[in-house]
Length: 58
Ligand SMILES: [Zn+2]
Image 1 (spheres, helix red, strand yellow):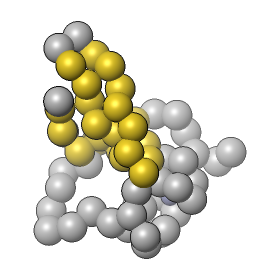
Image 2 (cartoon, helix red, strand yellow):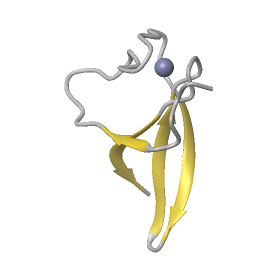
Image 3 (cartoon, protein in one colour):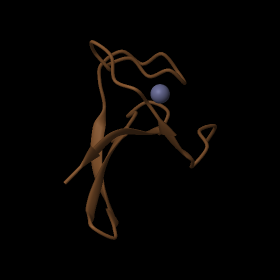
């Protein structure tokens, strides 16, 4: 697998749909990563597996 396991921080602009790592254009899967005060919502590229943190918490 070519994708690193690091979570890449992303500043959201108008739309975040295209994976910056591989160019996949059809959006992301999501996962929820537990941290001290809740969860981080992590977006995962279904094509290359790159993980992105767009700053969402729940
Ligand atoms: Zn990708």
